[in-house]
Image (cartoon, rainbow over all chains, first blue to last red; front, top):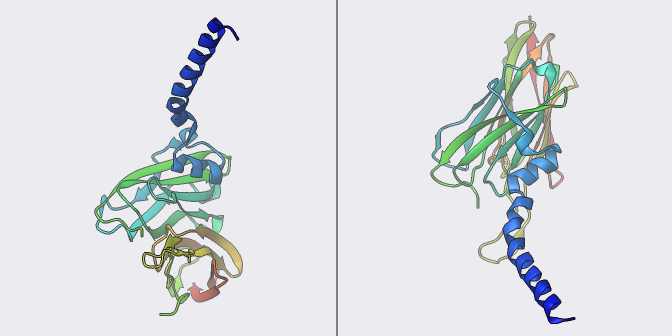
Length: 147
Length: 108
């Protein structure tokens, strides 16, 4: 290997090494995005936020161990297949998923969840036509509920 | 209360076609997997994994859940009732526990 090629190659290697970590975040998804991809099979960025899902949660939760949330929707229940609940910053963002049938009468689900820290709560609905819609709400947590 | 004890609450009477609220509370620790602070040993998760809601033995809703749901989970659904019948919930946890509870609704 002559000297000129050696310099060219090493310069290339240095550029490659410095760029690699900088590029990493673009490929590595956040935990929430990974979880959504794994469970729903679609990317979070492709899910549209809509007005007709009502996600009720306290603005400030005193204890993260017990945050009451309610998901209601005016979308007719026979058009809805499934509901997922996610908390963005939990160690495991997935909370629960619920299937609906026309016997439910309306889209309604209420439960209590754990939250590690202040974060967004998301309710994602899968409609029968295969599309996904979402509602997001921020809940401030003063004392975490994990561990 | 023992793990797995459940309370299922429905209105006693309803009108035909009415959408009623079905509520339940189940006694369960719902602990995530974690390290024991004293011994450093891994303690496996102990959570409910699945809950199914039936009306007259027809499946209505299914919930899959993990440790993200609070201890002693509370859940509420809606149900459209056309006939009198029995509301049943069947729930199981990741250690093989399986329980069910029933409640009756009289429809006029």
